[in-house]
Length: 226
Image (cartoon, rainbow, N blue to C red; front, side, top):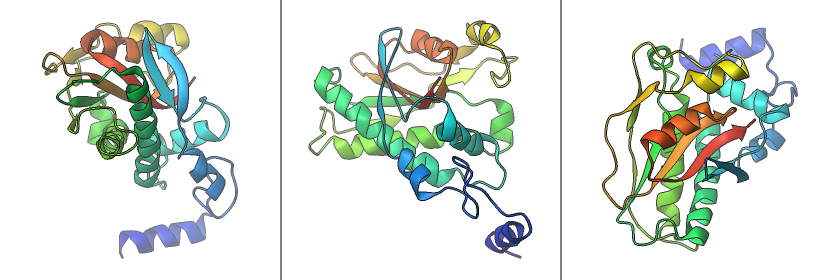
């Protein structure tokens, strides 16, 4: 039996609800799909501007949790749509700030995934980063143009052995849980600005560790900010 047939059978046996608002018989309702296609400024992390789809609560929190953990939820379309919106917002910010003016290219660097997430085959942030990169590349030649025509998605960061997942940890534990937990596999050449990508910014611990290792960061994108 094909994967699609198995999914249809599972849906018949166990009715689905929208991951965002709980509406029956749809994995994601039109309203919640729309919420994944709009990004706004969400402040900054240590001076690096952040864009996000919205605050980490309500429907958006449910969508993020489904993307990361729900076995019967295909995260791909949501990540592609969210990444497109985030990339367009980042492009607007770069154009207005001039942070990428004269740069030969821009790097998009995702937060490193844990070994467990890689092993389970659900690397959320890399796909989100690729969608952000595509949107930036598309913007480079249009009305949202911010300078360079070349955009590269680079897995520049990795978790050090023994680094613990932030999932399920309290705020105080999270704040110190990423300090020194990452290493840079490669650094961008001089003059190349970096756009950082993560799924959620909560205490900012992961974001600050990424910024520490990628001091050329000029923008950051996340699905939600707590």
